[in-house]
Image (cartoon, rainbow, N blue to C red; front, side):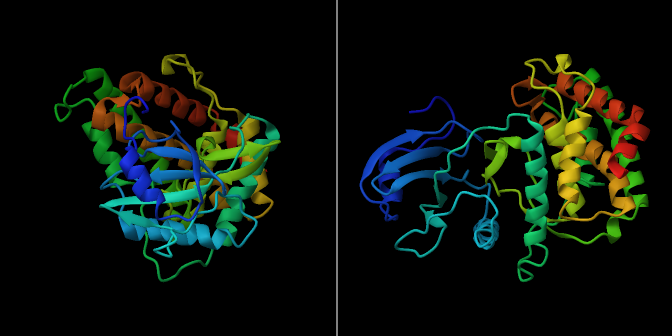
Amino acid sequence: MPRGGAHFSSEELAQVLSHYDIGVIHQAKPLNAGSRRAPKIVIASERGEFLLKRRPKGEDNLYHVAFAHAIQAHLSETDFPLAPLVTASDQKNTILYLNNHIYELFEFVTGSRYDGSAEATADAGLHLANFHRYLTDFAKKWKPPGTSFHDSSIVRIHLKTAGTKKMAHPDKKLQKTAEILMTLYNDSSVRVSELGFDSWPRQIVHGDWHPGNMLFSNHKLTAVLDFDSVKIASPVTDLANGMLQFSIVGNRPNPADWPDYFDQAKLVQFLNSYRRVIELDQSKLTSLLDLMIETMIAESILPVAATGFFGNLSGLEFLKMIQRKADWLNNNRDTIIHAITS
């Protein structure tokens, strides 16, 4: 049994797998990756290797999961890299709903994690563009979530909450840092809105395009693993988030030790590869730096305001690092926008 978090009981596993026609089971091994509330287990059977996932109870509804599965089914008809879903043999559906739980079974895809190379960075940008291209006019009948991190009242509520008496452990320093981030967030939101954001077309976006959701082989993207955040929004929000995720410099144990700067070469490599497929006008290109600031603040403040931490990291130190990085982007605005728009 894996330490901590949710897991599969042997009885549950046997019951779930009885709904799939994958032959005799040889081995079942827990996979400790992603959310600890969503247990995953690798199944080796006579018909191959598979990955079984149980979604956190109450986190998803069937409608949203069905929407995500419809997207994956559509993408499976293209050359887009993903892990194929397996249909439950008795329900004729890729969603198995059993005992108030939602289960998904995927064909297991091998690959390695993002290695930071220019080739892998560019390929990730190219496939994000393909994702948007393949889904431009998809599924008009669906009505998925339509919110984004841009100009978000939810983000502002969390920024106002962080460090205050509304939290279990108020912290004046955390509150002050959140107030600074509020100013940075508002300034970027205004600039993006003035560029015409509200008039830009909306479509299906991935919502969480980052290296942790991908597998690579020989610097090429072999599988996008997570479609849980798909929604309707402007594609530039996906693009800005991808540029952020592939260019941010960090990953040291203490966020106080993370440098202020971004890897500008990767930022441009990701964007230029995207632009090989999808053209962007000057206003959208100019918006990307501020959208990066918005998404960086939005992603960091939500967990910190709720728990005081970002994962297992100090919420205060993490937000102070986000402030430094936002300041760096603003202080180097002219140079970065010139690189983006040229």
